Image (cartoon, rainbow, N blue to C red; front, side):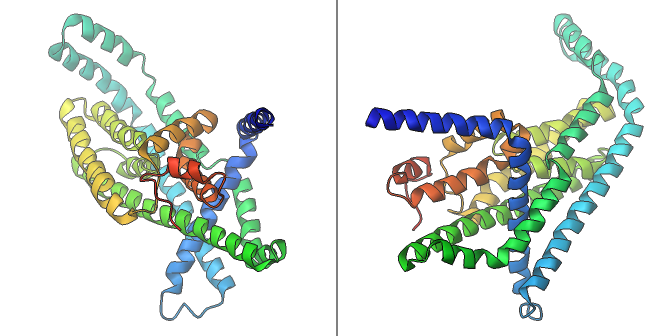
Length: 343
């Protein structure tokens, strides 16, 4: 019987992985819609704390919160488009600095190393790199139309969810247990999204002024890139620091600005990521650092950058659900940071 159960579990997991890989075009937009839905809920909670707004109807708060989020996203897209156009127009300047960088390498390093780097730099297609970077950013949100459709239906379903939950679990004990489970998922994911977004905004905001001070072109674009990549644990902050530093090297044709970008943006990442963010989050994200890295690689392997961005929220939901059932509770404890599951 035990061997049969193991076979069933293996088959279920295999089928699940296959579905996640081949149905990602449907699943990723739905998960993004859920995250946007959580963001709208966070905005609603903030609006509800305002003295003259908290008594407004819930449907009106939902509409206002949705408009705030969509307006913010539209403004971001517009700003990014403008910055991309500016960078595209200045590409000839970058390309002319390649020779200058090559000469600097020749002065700094031995002939064998410089020749290798020189050949690599000459083969760089800056326009192609820039277009791919922009394409990656735009693809992060998947199919915008599908995400919006999912989001609209989630907002329409929200008022009736508690009624449906009561109908699904008419027994008082089971209903309370499921209500508590949904509440814990809502609280954990909402707190994570709110706090992580604020930490990423702070990182991007400070980095914007640092890049503006150094004189790096299109600082808003690089600040937004830093903001987005900051959602990817560990690796994201490293990549977000290297990218603007590399382009600063191409823009100025010398090492000093690039080193300044690495130093200043790197310090901002360290201070926010290692001091401010952990203090703000506390035990909101009770996940083992090893699990964070493993899930980052796993979801990244299946879904690419979108999977990396979604890895932590998905893992949090899985841990919370497993902690509610005796059969899977040991796995939840194993995946947690300190072995303590919130009750």
